[in-house]
Amino acid sequence: MKVLVTGAAGQLGQELVVRLQPLHDVVAWSRAEMDLTRHRDVREAVLAIGPDAIFNCASFNQVDLAEDQQLTALEVNAMAVGTLARAAAVLGAVLVQYSTDFVFAGTATAPYSEDDLPEPRSVYAQSKLIGEWLAADAGRYYVLRVESLFGGPHRRSSVDRIVEAIRAGTPATVFVDRVVSPSFVADVVSASMFVVDSRPAFGLYHCVNSGHATWFEVGREIARQLNAPDTALSPVSVHDVKLRASRPQFAALNNHKLARAGFAMPSWQDALGRYLTT
Ligand SMILES: NC(=O)c1ccc[n+]([C@@H]2O[C@H](COP(=O)([O-])OP(=O)(O)OC[C@H]3O[C@@H](n4cnc5c(N)ncnc54)[C@H](OP(=O)(O)O)[C@@H]3O)[C@@H](O)[C@H]2O)c1
Image (cartoon, rainbow, N blue to C red; front, side):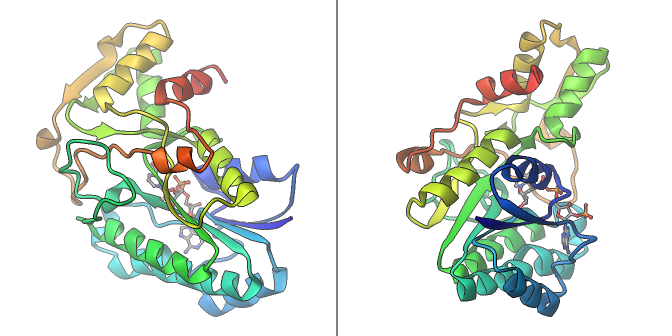
């Protein structure tokens, strides 16, 4: 199969390329190789390459900066998705688009499902939601909502920040009242390959590790698995930290739809265990 990976230098993109390369004919685009906001060039190049599947890992992810750079956020997170989707439709290719828990307001008390109403509260979140809608133009498409990604060749996620702090015994601030379902990049890649290979019903899937926890609980689990004291963890409330863009406080997602489709995501504790031992 011929596959195109965009955002190939990013956290998820790098891991996807590593895993796909032994199995498929992979064309990998970093931003330097193809800026996705060059819509005409993108369309022509995609049609010339003729991939069977496109994994779009490119994204404008700077949530606070997006509040001041709305047009750039929309260009990358929404319009570029539309361009890829329409090219995919011409080719009959499948598009895998990645989205975010941030599409929700974060006021729920139980993990969000795909049927819950998105209520994006930031420019980033709005642009990603529009990207979800435009992905549907491909016809054959999967939108995989991930959150709090960790793993992959880049070690710069929130999980990595906590791991480094615990190992070094230096303080790491962790929210006691922000609830997340962390997503291990290796598991997201496996799920992405599963949907393209097995073709469950096209559409939207939550693709996070099973379960949820506050960042403080995630930190305690990291310390437990490292056999280290959790004294480096410095608990804070979301109300103590002023951020430019609003973020969902309760951001847990349930992944039951993906499990029913045939891919059960392991628990976040299991994912952490595999990550910490590699
Ligand atoms: N990281 C998370 O915790 C998280 C949470 C929820 C959802 N997600 C979603 O998961 C997906 C993968 O995220 P990630 O963590 O792998 O992101 P990442 O590491 O920030 O990678 C995104 C890549 O997109 C590239 N890019 C940005 N603008 C571009 C443009 N105009 N043309 C081409 N490429 C461009 C970036 O290049 P530069 O480095 O040159 O800017 C970067 O390499 C994204 O859809 C993201 O929204 C991630």
